[in-house]
Amino acid sequence: MIATYTAAKAVGITGIDAYMFPCTGSQPTGVACKSIQTPINEFPVAVDSNKIPVNYLWLDIEPEDATQPGVECNA
Image 1 (cartoon, rainbow, N blue to C red):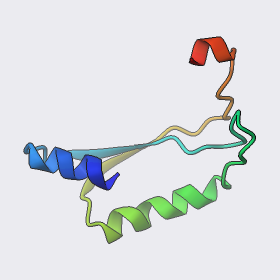
Image 2 (cartoon, rainbow, N blue to C red):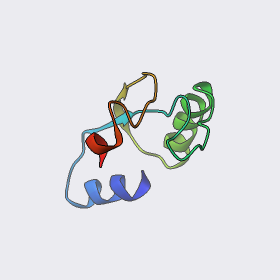
Image 3 (cartoon, rainbow, N blue to C red):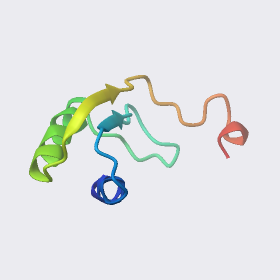
């Protein structure tokens, strides 16, 4: 997040929005995601502590199934 913001700022982009697609469930690798509340709580802390001026936060909350409808579609 910091590197992307720094790069945008370096080329003169001033309108910063953020998009968040938190993991909900488990990854195909078997790694369990954090609870949905954890990344929702962590995001504003990261933004505030790094002084990133976010205009809009777009949340994409949906069940996680990274391989649906199949691994071939997601390769």
